[in-house]
Length: 310
Length: 310
Image 1 (cartoon, chains in turn purple, cyan):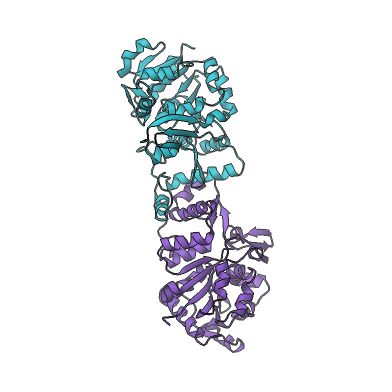
Image 2: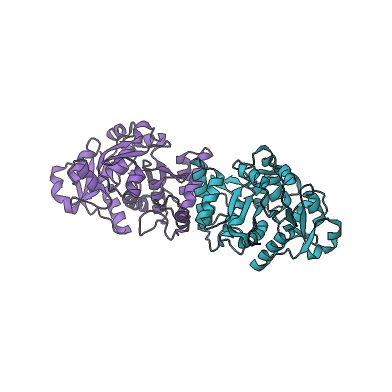
C-alpha cells in the first residue's frame, strides 16, 4: 500500500480521527477536503472549526481532552471577555485565537480560504493536502422546534438540545472548490473515503455543493464510508439524536441508505456484523478508535477494502 | 478640596500617572478626556492605546512594569501569531486582547467609542468619567526623514527612531466629542488640567480638534499644565528627542510657549526653579512621580495652584 493515494471528505472531531490514521499511512499522498458549513463570523473573526480541528489533529497539536482546540492552550482571553460582558459561549483559547485573527486578516487582504488553509498547514508542518470544500461561505442552517439556528448556535450555544426539523445547506448555493471537483474526477486514487463524521451535520454540507454527489456517483475509484453509528448509537456527538429527530432508523443501515447512490463500501463495526448480510459491499471491522493504533488500523482496513476497485 | 472638580486632558502612560493622582483625590468628580490620535486598526481590531492605558491605570489593573497593558497578562496569543507569521510588532496580551475584540465588535454593532469607553470604565469599577476626545477617527500621521508613518508604526514598530519633520493631526478634520466641548465651556471646574503627556504626540491631537484651543482660551477656570520636560530631559518617552528634531529648545520654557495662548499655570519641577522667574504664573513643585503618594501630592499641588481662579 505504499503507493496508495486517498481523497478523504472530513468534518471535525470524529472524522479527524480517521484522517489522522490515513495521514500516518499516506503522508503527502492524502488529500483532505474539509467541511466549512460550520464556519461562522464570531467576534468579528472568521472561525473555521472543522478546518482547525483537522489541522491541529494532523499537526499533533490538538487538545487530546476535547479533540478540538490546541493542546496546552490557556483561557485568559475568554476570562477577560467574560468580565467585559462579551459573548463567551464559544470557547477560543489564547493560542487558538491567533489562527482566527490571522485567517480573518488574510481573508480581508484578499487571500482565499484555500490559500490560507494550505499556508497554515505548511506552517504546522503538515504534508497532506488540506482543502476547504469551498472558498465561499456555505453556512448550514438548522431548522429546530424553537426556530432556525445558525450552526454553531445550535451545536455549541444550545448544545444540540433543540430538536431538528430540517437542515438547510448553504453549499447548495455555493460553488465547490474547483480542486475539490477535479479531485473527485481523478481516476488515480486508491479510494475516496467519507470519514465517520456526522453525515447530516458534517458531510451533507459537502454533498450539497452542486456537482459533488454526481461526481461521487461518476467516480472511477471505490467510494468507502465508515459508519458513525455503532450498535444503534453514535460514537460521539448528536448523530443518533438527529437521526431519530429526522425519523430515521438509528443504525448503520440508514447510513448506507443515506450514502446509497454513490457508496461502494460501508465499513461496519463488529457489533453490527449482523447487518452486513443486508448491505452489499459492506465490510466488518473494528471502527471505534481509541488510540492512534486504532486509527491506523482502520485506515489500513479501508485501503484493503478499496483494493478490489470500484 | 473635597468639592473640587477637575477636567483633565490626558495621553497615555505619562499622563495616566497624574490622572491616577487626580482620581484618588476626586473620584467621580474627575472627568478625563483622552487622546485617540494613537488609535489604529490592527489585525482587524480597533486599538485605543491611550484609552486603555488610562482605564487600566485608574482601575488599578495596569501592568506596573510597563505602565500599559494589564498586570499579570500572558503572551500566548502573540507567540502563536508569531508562529503563524502574523504581525507581531505590537504586543497584545491575552487578557488585553479581549478589550480590543469587544470594542471592535461593539463599534461594528453601532455603539460609539464614547459609549463603549464609559461602559468599559463601569465594568472596571471606575467612578471617574472617561471620554475619548472624539468619536471619529482622528489618526496622527508622523512625517519623518524616512517618509510618512502611521502613529503606532512610528512609535512602536520603529521605536521613535526616525527623525520627525512634522506632525499631522487627524483631529483637524474631525469633530471633538460634543461633551468634550461642553465640558470645556463648563464654568464650574476647579481647574482644567493638561497632564504631563507628550505635548506633540498626545495633547496636540486633542488641541487640533476644531474649537478646542478656542475653548481653552475662553475657559472661565484656570488651565494648568505640568511640564513633561525636567532639567532639559523628558521624564519618559521621546518628548525631548522630538522637541530637538522640531528645532525647539528642550526646556519647560518651550512647553510654556507651546501652550502659551491658553495656559494660566505651568507646574515646573524643582530642578527647573530657575526658569520660574521668566514664566509668569508658573509654580515650582516635585513633578516626578515614582509612587502613588507622588501622584496624589502633585494632584494636590495642582488643585492648590488653581485655587486662585483664572
